[in-house]
Each structure stands twice: as C-alpha cells, then as structure tokens.
Length: 128
Image (cartoon, rainbow, N blue to C red; front, top):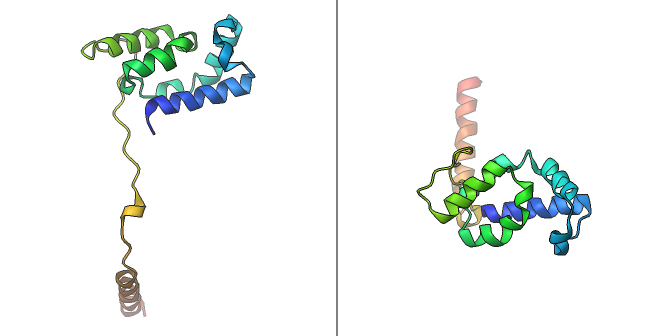
C-alpha cells in the first residue's frame, strides 16, 4: 500500500470518528483540527511522508496541514519541492518491504509429502 493511501485511510477513520464533514474542511474550527491531531498523533511518525509525491502532497495533505506538527509539514513541503532539502525534525524512513505474494509461488505437494515422510523417518531413527 502506498503511503498516501495509508494517510488517506487514517484521515478517513479520524474524520468518521469525530463526525466531521470531509466536504467542508474550510468550515472546520480549530478545535476540529486539534481533535483530529490528537487522534492521529500516534500514527503520524509511522507514515513515510517523504515518499509521497508533490501532487499528492498538494491535494491530499495540504488541506489538513493543521493536523500535522508544523515542523513535519514544513519538512514535507520542502522535500516535495526539492528532494535535496533534508528534513530538520523528522527522519526519512526506509521504503516499506513489499508483502510476499504467495499466489506466485507454486506449491509442490509431492515434494512437501516426501519431506514430511523423510522427517518422520529421521525422527523415528533418532528418538526411538
């Protein structure tokens, strides 16, 4: 899953929990942003902000900048403009490892059966 999708899902969760109208962000009060910030604060350090494109930043993060710590927002903004600008207050986390797609692995049941059978024989020889 891409980092921007993680952010969007977390944001949707928080907005739903606080019963806010996503289509009227410009009408939210500072208390609304503060309550979202409080709800999301434990998740924010785990998002790889610096792997998010400038376009996604502009449309999907910027409208909610009051939810993020100011230092983080400034770091993301600077990095999205120029990748050589290193964040001052947050560490750039490594890319997530892709999940293993087991559907691409062919399971050889005959081989598994033979290994299990051999394993039973070895256990029998060693422990009986």
